[in-house]
Amino acid sequence: MGAVPTKASAKPTKARERAVAPSPRNRLDPVRRTLTAYVAAALVLAVLTLAGILVLGGTLGPFITLAGVVVGAGLVHRSATARLAGARLTGEDRMMQTLAAGMLVLCVVLAAAGAVVATLT
Image (cartoon, rainbow, N blue to C red; front, top):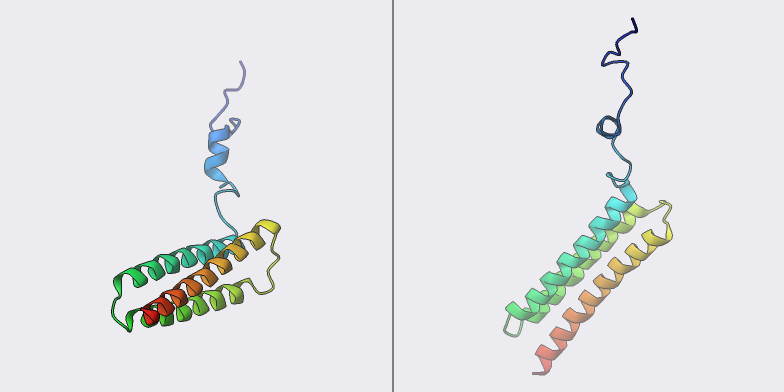
């Protein structure tokens, strides 16, 4: 009579291998997490810029929006560049970094344009 395979000696299936060892694709490395947070913060700042321009009225509203956007963009950019200092960035990483920095610049320009238009009218 042959030996009956036990649970411990059974050949592992693909489902068991996936459950035991997490796939490297499921977790982002720290550089990608930082870049993702950088892009997300730039998007949030863009939404806040548009909301500030539309919601805040009066003569000081656009300047309050401009001041908040400049401070927010500076903090986000400084934090992200400090975390990415010395990291090896791939082409995709540099593209994400440029995208986020460009969005921050556009937020500041849009807030400044809103302040100028509010001043002229």
